Amino acid sequence: MADALTLPQLMRFNTPLQIGDVVVNSRVLQSPLSGVTDLVFRRLVRQFAPESMLYTEMVHASQVCHVRELPKLMEIDPNEQPISIQLFDCRPHFLAEAAQCAVAEGADTVDINMGCPVNKITKKGGGSSLLRDPKTAEAIVRAVVEAVSVPVTVKTRIGWDDDEINILDFAQRMQDAGAQMITVHARTRAQGYTGAARWEWVARVKEQLTIPVIANGDIVSVESAVACLIQTGADGVMCSRGTLGYPFLVGEIDHYLKTGTYRPEPTVVERLECAKEHLRALFEYKGIKGIQQARKHMTWYAKGFSGAADLRNQLCLINSVKEGVMLIDQAIDEL
Image 1 (cartoon, rainbow, N blue to C red):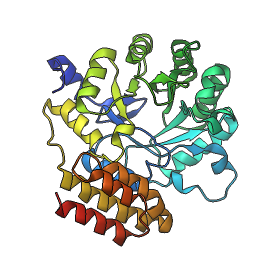
Image 2 (image 1 turned 90 degrees about the horizontal axis):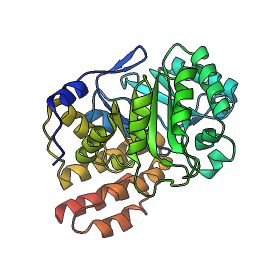
Image 3 (image 1 turned 120 degrees about the vertical axis):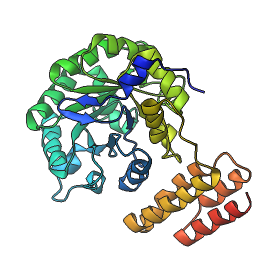
């Protein structure tokens, strides 16, 4: 069970999240996840979290500026608002132009990735490498703010490594440059996704800034979300890896914050039925590439029940929807 929220806390989290002039009727956000949060996945999350802010996978600004047709990563459903398109690069003018395209595509906000720890991103000056170049980060935010009419937000980490934790100065610079919200993944770049998230840094950022501060990192359940909010005083939480194979999480946390009661967790059968829906939709949207991408998703769904390991081993090799559905139906019959 989650630690009890006080009545004032419950009342606060039952009020809208104000991002500039955009009002979001949920304090729980679905993180952008590369290779995961495509249109298909977001539709699943939206079923259970109708009012939460969702994010596209991060889009390289040069992909937008150098092609005549916008990348598929930027495709959004007209009915999936509120929606944010996340961009990354280290060149302010490229990001400004890409942000204009994102708004034309229907983005309610534009998010700048300044936290991705992957080497191929940081070596080119993007993602979390911007923590070491705050002047460029400021220039990026200012350029994008000037280029678009929607709120500009930033997602980052607490620092490059334990010797370079500079989130307090960096976050202040982002706010001063015009960012309307900041999401803090409470790990350093060096940590990657290992070790515990250090929520105490989110609390310090929240004490310092006037714009909304969203906590990210180790938000994997209702209990962890509530504990994070109590410890940090953040304005909301962003779910990341806890949603892999579990698109129900954002909605479960949102329901609790709004009502103080738990939504019943999906049964194993309901989770596996969701996996089949996800598989079919990926194939319809992307064809054979969708099947290839579905393999990892299917293995994430196959957890926490007898025979799950064997099912995972088989699902990671599927070559068709029929094969995947057959394997899942066999697993359901054996429960």
